[in-house]
Length: 165
Image (cartoon, rainbow, N blue to C red; front, side, top):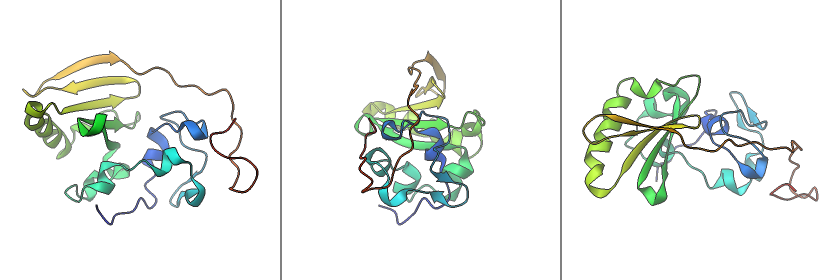
């Protein structure tokens, strides 16, 4: 594992949904502080604590792949059989910049024999990169995520634990 730290990146705080915080994907977490990072890092819920983007985990990915620089968060799914490329909806073509597109397409080609898939996500819409270098538009495949309660998270010991009720 890498010695990298999230620092002020915070792209997962925008792109990834967190049920314990009633935070939908693609909106900024109310606890993220610009240029500072997570405001509740020490008491963050399990959904946040268990998530690590591939840039944090894989030393082979240089600083260009850091999510706040690349415009997307890479993370594995289905036991490592899927590479998810979660794009910031404000930068839906960020993955097409060099060196990202060539590398992602290379992973799709090389991993196909082992059942590995590379999925490009823009919001709820998904594309699969094919081993031959093409793309298959899978359409809108994620359900909409909405939360009705917007109660504030309290610090540990305040009498309220995760998940919020």
